[in-house]
Length: 342
Image 1: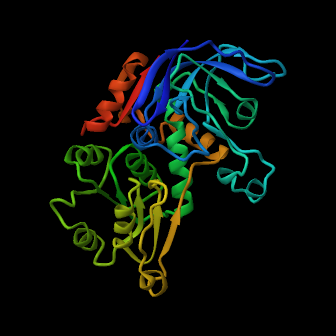
Image 2: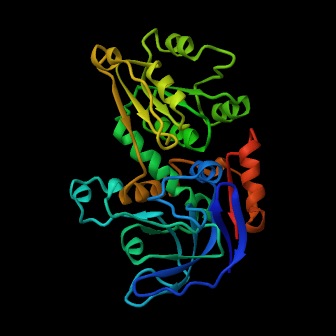
Image 3: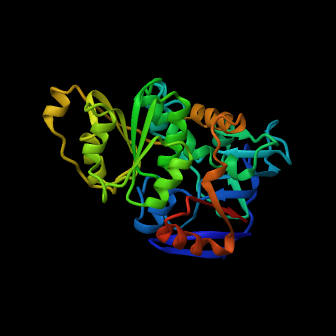
């Protein structure tokens, strides 16, 4: 089968490997769509955390497809079913899992290999984090279950309530998924901040109430003006840079919450004002990945039409064009997510 193999930073090669055979409890899925992700772009451009991805590896982690082979010992799923699987599966036994922090599992298994004609799914993932895909949604929509699950985990942690004012820093795929999610959760006022006008315009079409380009308008002053001088109830950082993590601290109201969602490069640090934390009683939190429950919630929200992810897929390309796809994502101001159709 044909695969996109990642060897290192910007070293992505199309190769041919043997189609894997599913063992006891495993399945083999024919990939019908794999969507690009901001995390994929970061890995491609600068590398990633070694405990999560080890090189060389078949790249990609957002996918959906058709069941091609079912290993021994499984009554479900059935051959021919439309399915999508998570890129992780917790052990359910470690201290973190016993506390309900399944996304922080000490023995998490990770699955990469979406940019390929077939993907073999480990037994634990089949039993813990695989869902059937309804016939009425596309494979591309189903593939976006993974990033939406991560967003749902974050917004639930942040405790967004009806009537809240929410600032989102970043109008990329993750920022836009946050926008769609908080709008459905009843946020009264949504404010998107980004340096790219084209992405801000895209956010406005998806329902953002206000858009701010900090190169043209002081975002701190603008947010204060839009929130009656107080700052936002919730600020979500969806880029992953120390500078924007720190920017989020300046945009929140007293007693508000900051969700530092975007993952920064390893080894980076930020400065936090003790006055903001102490006298302002500000809550600052991170959010990493998702739990199997969030994957199920995300697919249900997509399938029900509650969250429409179709507009986020702005282009479709073949597996042979994978390098071109990442070059486009690195430079384009208008592309959001590209669907790779092997």
